[in-house]
Image (tube, rainbow, N blue to C red):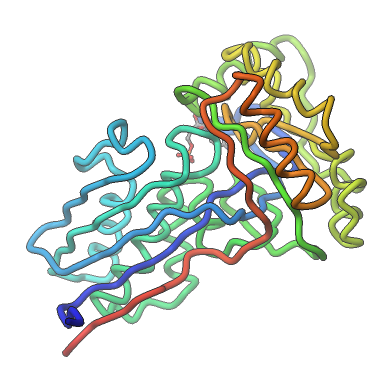
Amino acid sequence: MTDTSDGVRVRVPAKINLGLAVGPARSDGFHELATVYQAVSLYDDLHAVPGDDVTVEVDGEGAGSVPTDASNLAVRAALLLAERAGVAEGAHLRVTKRIPVAGGMAGGSADAAAALVACDLLWRTGLARDELADLAAQLGSDVPFSLVGGTAVGTGRGERVSPALARGEYHWVLALADGGLSTPAVYAECDRLREGREVPDPVVPAALMQALRTGDPAALGAALHNDLQPAALSLAPDLQRTLEVGQGERALGALVSGSGPTVAFLVPDNEAALDLSVALSASGTCRDVLRVTAPVGGARVVEQVVHR
Ligand code: C5P
């Protein structure tokens, strides 16, 4: 029997950063960034149904370490939307996680973006897409990108996104680590490692943009760069062993994703992805291995039943 009660289901992707240039710390505690995001085919699902308050339940990958109180980013997103739109309704959010928690892949941001899209439809707020993007930016640096997906350049603290000219489909292998890394701790470690050094304004490397424009995976592999990687490796030294596994295989490049600890390997094709997955699993250096393709679109509605 078909369920005809109201509900909106949204699917939202994880991201990796192909380039992440980190500038000096700003007076608001954030760092000025120049980054290139790419959305990959690893998704969280969020199902929103009407409720008296805004509540959340979480299942799936790492669900036990996701808070379900008012600090949950999806709850904060729904409450912010209700306030902005002057909505008196509530919603119950059911999140199914596949994106690793605290993995440097914007899992929390993805759920916030999904909550915005789902509750916007459930409550028929009538807000414009750029108003949702504005709320997204208030919720977190990566949330606006989770709305749009694809391949995009992020500036400011990462919240100002514009689509990048990018051609081709890319194959990635993701090595998931045991446990997570705290994003603020990784930025603080980055500052500590660079203490006393002049930190230039962040720029996206020209070679990276050129590789994307031409759709050249080998050139992209060579241009991958993450300024947070030394800090992530300093806090989680075992990641070095994970990175080294790619060297014996046909990986075109490898880097820590965002603030880590997930490691992303770019490979030429599906066969190379399978070979590297086997090598990574056999190495015992990671908790799990996933194969994904990119780019994919941002948060999208996969099911919508709204009466009235
Ligand atoms: O924006 P978001 O909530 O994802 O940021 C989490 C934390 O990461 C911030 O509180 C800050 O410590 C750090 N961060 C930063 N500079 C950025 C983005 C994040 O220092 N551009």
